[in-house]
Every structure is written in C-alpha cells, then in structure tokens.
Image 1 (spheres, rainbow, N blue to C red):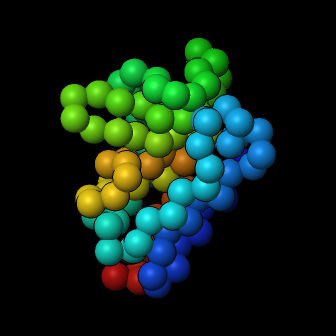
Image 2 (cartoon, one colour):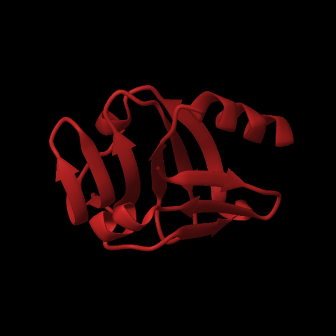
Amino acid sequence: MAALTITDTELQLKLTRREKVAALHGDVQVPISAVRDLSVAEDALSAVRGLRAPGLNLPGRTKIGTWRGRGRRQFAVARRGEPAVHVFLSGAQFDELIVSTPRAAAIVEAHAQRG
C-alpha cells in the first residue's frame, strides 16, 4: 500500500513495487510549498477523472497511475472502499494526487494543524 508522508519541507508518496509497475512511475516527491490544499475524498475512485495515460484501471476496484484531462494531470493510487487524501498542487509535475489510505482524515487534520 502506498505511503504518504508530509514533513515541513516535502510531501512524499512512496509506492510499493507492484504499484510502481502498475503506474509505470516511481515514487513522487513534491516540495511542501507546492501543496495548495488537502482534503478527504470519501470515494477515492470517483475522485479520479480523465483519461488514463499511463496506468492501471480495474473498473470499480483500483486506479493506479496518471490521469489527464482538460489541462490537468492527476496521479492516483485509489482503491474501492477506502477514503483518500486529495492533494491539490501548483507548480509541480502533477496538479492533484489522490492516495487511498484508511488514515486519510488523520493525515489531512495533521497537515491542517501544521498550518
């Protein structure tokens, strides 16, 4: 399962070996200054929009990889039945990250308390 870590200087998304293969992409690191907002997406799969390019889509189960649409790029590791952290970025490789984790609410709250 992907691990999302937020420090004072960086947001890191570490993928498992299988997720890297499915996404055709490695780990993602973003400077904390590029993070505009974080929120909880209760339905991770529906938060992923656009066309898959490249990545894995198992309809109704899993979306892993890059999704593109109307001038925006999302990177997703989304699974059915799990909430996700929805990260909005500016000036980074992706415009949004969507990462399924049962700890989504706690991650968003901890980031909000950092201010």
